[in-house]
Length: 374
Image (cartoon, rainbow, N blue to C red; front, side):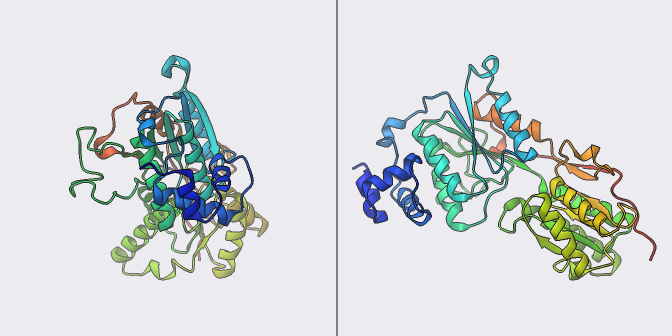
């Protein structure tokens, strides 16, 4: 028997009208209530527009593109690239709709529910994922249900979904079925080599002679933050083994976390200078954070790079024009977004195992140099 709206209401302990309001998204509902309703939807595997059989295939021309912050150039570039693949001459006139989550895991799930109701032809999720087990489970279930109903799902800039229980044979993500090694109904992934990029960036600073390196990292609960921090610390560990000193001992003290924005770079740098006044280099979570780092250093009377070297990540358009020009790690965001768009439309074959990894490139510019003497 198909799960009904009343079943969801009973599980969540609310009225059917409240469930309808949550799923429609057009009426204010308290956050705790919305969470209970969405949890009940996941637990009961409720399909919004009736029984699953009615959603055997997506039928609309709608493509949803989920971003954390459309005002952030990182997401703006990717969303624009995805949309460029939806032009009439390429895709027969698909309509790309950008959904701005504001970094909210709850809003991410709500948008996916709305896109399922609209029988979206495809969904592209961009940027890092939240590492909360409950959210990861709810997100994975929602995306697999979308994919199984005929919606093409692509993750761009985030890791693959955890393997579903009972999927695969231990030979790779999701086993194989002849579709690039990916199980039927599994989302595809365009992942970024964040670990490798951060490792090369730290190796660059170490090769210049820097040993007191601060790190203004992103939010601790985000996958991108963890992967970039892992790459940074792997480089420190390797250098310590090769040269007989332990740079990891101070890595925790010389790391601060904040948002992926300029103010976090500014405040984080002041905290790093308080902890280590003789800092010779600062790595930033991304290029926008690096702008805040540079502003804080200048306000403290420090020169870049003569006194302190600064490096970012992503190679956003302003990075080469900053003063001094910013050493950073280039992610080909437009190319990655365009590929995600083609995969979402079925215009490009799925990569082996369903996962394509986008390589990064170290861009050495004027904001880094050998540390000052002493």
